[in-house]
Image (cartoon, rainbow, N blue to C red; front, side, top):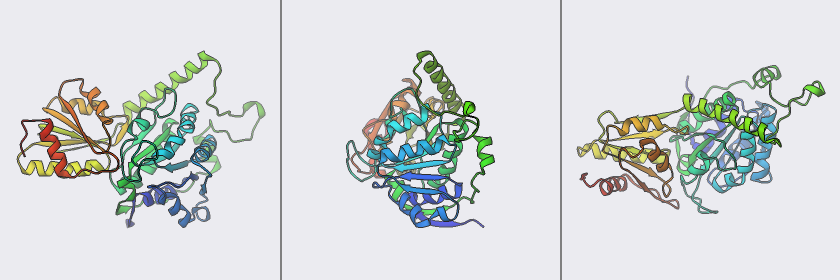
Length: 362
């Protein structure tokens, strides 16, 4: 029988991490994601599954604890919100360069700076373009429901281990804080030492012949070797782009105008689309689920049938750059966004559509 619970998105993350069989969580409280750590502390998984849960002294300490755990092949994760993730960027870059799997949750709030504690989607650039230094990517999953918050824990870990690269769940504060029914996954057993060594032969286990120990590092002082490292990273990223694009389409079969939105904003846009269609205006939507890899080909395909595209985001216009690159100027692409924690309603989305495309009347 399915186990259905009513909980916040942040709480769903904590429950799903335990049920995935995660080995460790290292974090630091910051609004609006503090319930992840609070829920883990309340559930006390170290007594049931052996999962380590530790509140670090800072965000910097937390991401470096993740680095250490990931280097041993363990399934480890952290969570934070926008300015906290900024502090983690050096460690995230180290994880990517060391080819280590890890899961990072960012429940976005308004910025820049300390900003507000209200919802935002303004960390899109930071997540999808590599917020740290160097040529690297994160796998970025954008949930729009509490159910997806739970589901993306297992998916994020599985993808991180498949490609030996960090994965990020990029949620906005609305999804983190809202409550919905969620079906929790079945409890997975944690991996045995034998299973871990078989799955992660690259891991630093701290034992064995001194001449055959694995060394995990992101440092390479010889330029030719560092170039080969980067070439290997890029090969991995091309494989991810080829195999792991995820998205959903709504009312696109006959759409004359297209909305592109992710996270909680996609839910608002879906209501706007229903209202538009009730008035005889054929609007559809594509919701990227993976923000990286981005559904470039799918948007390019839809661009061939529509008269224009509107991106709707809780920011000043970030995802619009990827949408414009996807369509290569074949159709006009406009942006509508709110900032600072302000959330649009469906009527504002329709007003933006009619303002951008003057042939539309609502």
